[in-house]
Image (cartoon, rainbow, N blue to C red; front, side, top):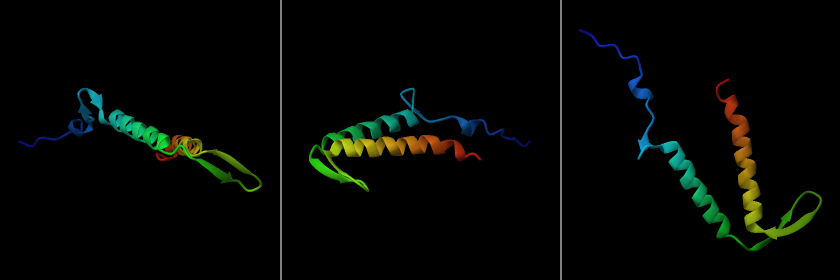
Length: 81
């Protein structure tokens, strides 16, 4: 007798305490990002092509984090194409 798998057993996602591991990973990365931002409170000069501004480093890091997140969100739909 041959048993044929329909692949449904491998499609179950991992969970820890009923919470999907994906959400746990996102939460851990979020906490680490906030910790990193608040560890960098010094003032820095940020030079753009034409002008220079002075701002706290955490603002520059937060802007970079948000821009990266937005790009990742916008490009995630292209992966399946």
